[in-house]
Image 1 (cartoon, helix red, strand yellow):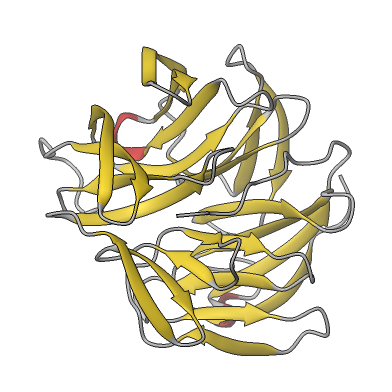
Image 2 (image 1 turned 180 degrees about the vertical axis):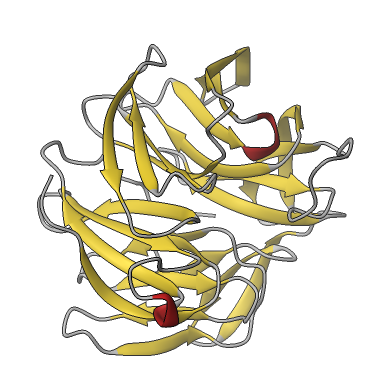
Length: 277
């Protein structure tokens, strides 16, 4: 793995990194609000002002961004179109091969531990205002991703120290629920999958790492990151071997706080579809 470089900093808890075709990186500051655009020349601008609690970001085929928070909405040229309005909060999201948005609900305070949590669900947003529940019993929903062939849906559940795996049928739903991995020293947040099938998991447990797990659940790789809360990651660049990692702190330079890092991977990340709804 190549050297880790810091690209931007001075934020709170960062989430939802996503790179567009022009090399612009979008990311959110959950507690302070706002979705930001980091351009290839290093300049940072505001893409979506003020919006708080954005745990997931996707690109839309018509332009603009799909963002989570209090709802799932498509933001284009400053205008927001609500795609899904649940009766709870939302966290991370992902887009399947047919352009539909997969998103998890938050039915409890994500920053409260040590008690029985109200579990949320995973939904697939089919069209504007139409969503289908894929499964429930997700204690603390976080990163979502698909295997290279699109047939396995991975879903971080921070409160159970594990990542769920389901067989994913794009026409019907999810089945065959099992744990890809569950470890006492793992608190999974965002995740991304590479073309070799490795599931790269941002760990907020304090391990200071993005940890790679095989489809069989064996830990096979690690990216050390100078942060206690490594919150999410994505692949990008012309060869999809650039790895962007975001955090909620910086142990190397503490005054930088939430930081955007970049490194290089040996195996490209899977291509991520754009939303079409």
